[in-house]
Length: 55
Image (cartoon, rainbow, N blue to C red; front, side, top):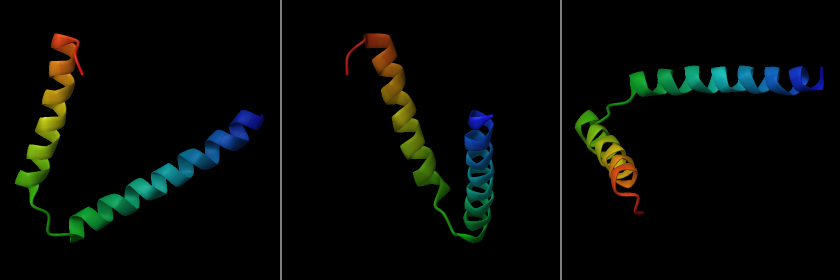
């Protein structure tokens, strides 16, 4: 029961934050090319770490 009391509010707060972030992103003028580049570099770093075992 304690777990339920702790986990349920965390889920609700996370859901509300996610809705707020999505609403703010829709209003903002974002350079999606830059965002995609950053995400690509991060994915490349994880992939290279997985392949080479270094890092």
